[in-house]
Length: 101
Image (cartoon, rainbow, N blue to C red; front, side, top):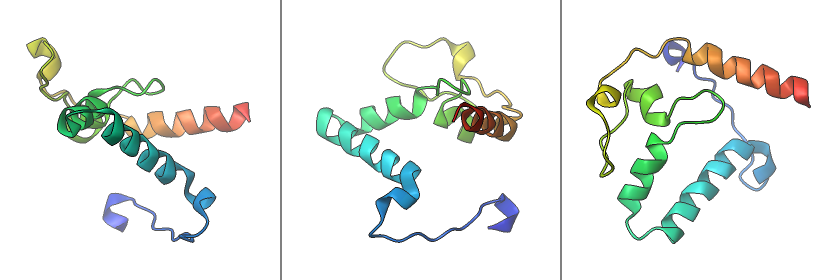
């Protein structure tokens, strides 16, 4: 875990407010499952959708490129690009959010 700079924190399973981010992710995936006819396409499009704050999608952060979908996409967007400073962008967003509170 230390090699990947992950922090392991345990929370109470009976107190959902302690882990808001995970609860929100679970709620989003449940909504996708109930609203979509094809769960695989729904999850693929969710993984390709960039976040407003850092302008990167989950696929771009993990694999460095967008994933192929049934939508037409230029080959330039499908090529792998080195995404640098993702961690810095996320920490900057967190600091901005703290200042707003």
